[in-house]
Image 1 (cartoon, rainbow, N blue to C red):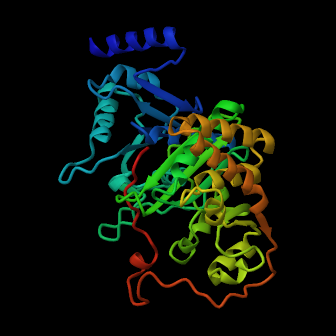
Image 2: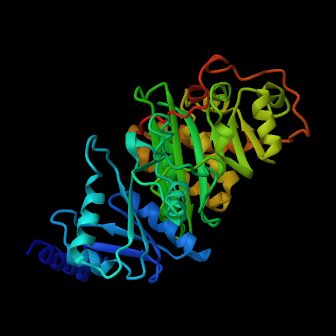
Image 3: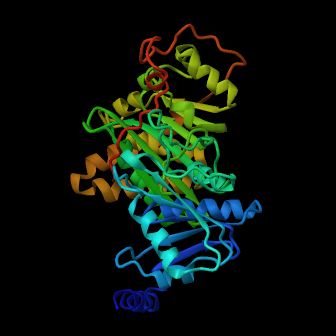
Amino acid sequence: NTPDIVQQMMDKFAAVTGRSYHLFEYTGDPKAERVIIVMGSGAETAEETAKYLIDKGEKVGVLTVRLYRPFSVEHFIKALPETVKEIAVLDRTKEPGSVGEPIYQDVITALNEARLSQSPRVVGGRYGLSSKEFTPAMVKAVFDNLKTSEPKNHFTIGINDDVTHTSLSYDPNFSIANEKTVRCVFFGLGADGTVGANKNSIKIIGEETDNHAQGYFVYDSRKSGSLTISHLRFGPEPIRAPYLIQNGDANFVACHQFTFLEKYDVLKYAKEGAVFLLNSIHKAEEVWDQLPAEVQAVIIEKKLRFYVIDAYEVAHQTGMGGRINTIMQTCFFAISGVLPRDEAIEQIKYSIKKTYGKRGEAVVQRNFDAVDSTLANLHEVKVPAMVTSAIRRPKAVADEAPDFVKGGSLTGGRSRA
């Protein structure tokens, strides 16, 4: 009786909140021929990718499992389109020695017990292992696999498996990003206030504009004194993207520590025509020749708009010490145009008073002074037509290292905030 009871509670919940759920939730073409079955956070990515592909004329869909145990064969079959010919079942686990992962085996059993007149072909795959990102590009690869005459079974997506060779290849540049959604990436140093400032920015955008907003923050395990990366999205439509901003997808990239340019490829996130904001001790007319040649090349190639500010000097002049968060936040609003400049400054000051009011009027006033001094010290750099720097980014590993190591294929774990 449990499945029916759970569905009754879901219906009751829908009556109270307006949000409707079912034991098995189908999204996609009602006459889909290719369907992905998935459970958990990966479902949202799969659903959004399916909608994108449907707009391109493909007959695809996604069936999300909401109640896994007990598995209701009746509700499962009702949710599945009758037109389906190929199914890919995705599990976020690997059970060594089993004939297949858990959901895959349940789907096979359910289809067998339902005794359909024409049973679809089913393959299983694994995704998200070792906390790897699950992106729209990977979802498309799974759908494309189902197109082939002999779809690969027991595959892995997102990891280059060079041992058992079960991986599906995919195009990492494939994107379903909504052009109306602004995507921003910020590189900061733990304890410099970058993450706190970005959290405030998301609150301001979400509360003071009609935009939907999303923020995700990646920390090093040491936090203070180490790299932080903030991923921000905002736009007029709901944001359903439970994955990090992808390479070549960001409209705005900010680097709050100049030395990061010598260690990390921060501009890999920037799309053509994006804005690049740099905190630098070098003045606008000097900074170009202080950049590594690799950075110059990307700025020219991607036609980036390049802005620079000496945030530490502004912080020193206004008594802020090493805290540059308020200054860089003001730069972001001044350049991005998400709010009119005066309104943005007003909202930043309101946020400052709310955040630091308990620490005393002197602290609040120092932050206000930092905001007022920022715009006078923010400058756009005129980008030359060619690379001129003699500085090269040091190699992270030796030339004789394996491609797997040199290519940066290893993706670290992520800390949630």
